[in-house]
Image (tube, rainbow, N blue to C red):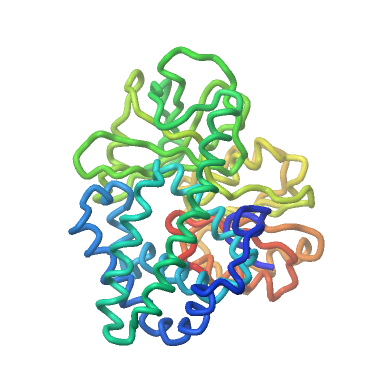
Length: 392
């Protein structure tokens, strides 16, 4: 089975069903007619919301809005369609709800923001579908949107409380001081943060989670970076690749020892989901979650496959080589692009017994993930830098 983020877990979505509710029947009946227009609705929704409620812009990375393909818009489109078609079997959406709730908490989304989304989304549905939206249909979809909002609000309340309650935890954004910066690959800096208040309490989190950086600079929306240090230390580390024209990655690379930056608590649904033997596959900066798995779950790991232009362009290659784990590196510069079939052949001996954890570019994950599943891998877990549900 191929999974985005984490294995679906018990959640509000998994314990609540809307089957038999009038709005559920309406949404289920109209979903096939709405589906062909879902992308047009989403394309209308975002500009509408940003115009009517410009304060919401702080929650969205502009690159994900306007890149080709626009992953944020694809993620919302996929989410709307998944909700509509599973509204009477919400347990099927538990994994997606978990991913969304973790991202929302990292961005500090609050309950007051959901009516804004509802109002603008309903306006877009009415604008795109026109007279097809009868009062009954409009009421049904409106109630369904707010029902999903309430699920997320409840899930996020739990996550906020859990993040504050765990050892070294906190609520909201907390100031951290840069303890050190080191180059770990060409154009990649590993940054070490310690609490600005001098706390030496170990910080607990789940390996695979990310921290979120909140700059005060104009246009610098929050960014998520996988935590590369193991939990249980009084510090957090992340690795940042400087992107051409990237405002926030440039700000991260501009940090120096002693600087202060506000960070959200660790959130994120990506993690090792079983104690089964694991194969780690990371492409480029996608090696970062594999690094924390190496440090936290070394005894589980049977194989690591790292992919990049060359070894100087990928962080933590030496850490893997020195770990004693069976590690191989594929250089795209020297040996060409590694196809999905070639990748499967490289890990074939592990297919039957291991879980597979992958992180890298979206278009790459879209090919290699299904290829591993087709080859017989029982668990394939994908982590994407960007809106994960854009791959759904």
